[in-house]
Image (cartoon, rainbow, N blue to C red; front, side):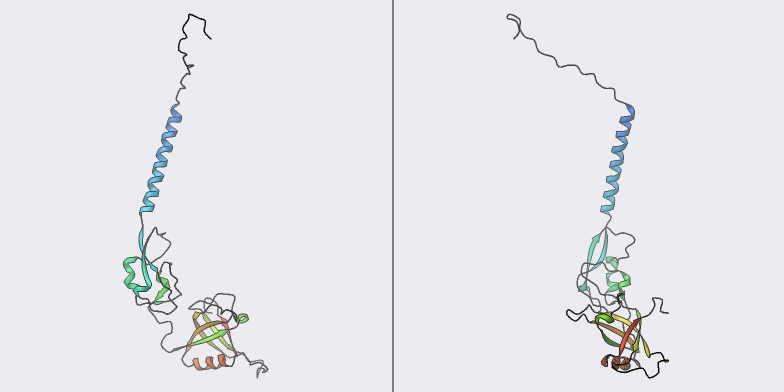
Length: 218
């Protein structure tokens, strides 16, 4: 306690000397603020730049003709590498056929549609059922060229072992998913109209094997 008769005066806080501000630190701070602002501006421009594109809203099977009900529109920030059909060009794809299977929620690209029928004039479509051990590990896609090879029936032998087996050229139009339980895959193959009945008879007698051609068709 202070001595009697002497009033206690206010206590002053200790004086702290102000630090000298260095010009370099100030300049660096301003530069960081400016860079941050520029980054935000670039980000806002990227977010703001959106493109109206065509989307798929319903399942569309290979070869099916596209209608307006199958398609929709979406506004997205589009990477230039993605060749999606612009919404303004939606009318140009309506009436074309799906060259691949289309799934809802995906963007539509020009390579996924075609104006040509997947089965051309002078061709026939033959369905071929493949057992799990006969299905190639390589995915079967529309447009792939195949050889349909005739093999001896069970219990039979080739008439002339020196003669190569008979084969017919075909083209994959569509391949189904493996059936539950059996694992059988059904492949629709287009062949010439002259070869269609022969291929069908090979399928019926279970004497047909499907062989993929090289990608270049050779």
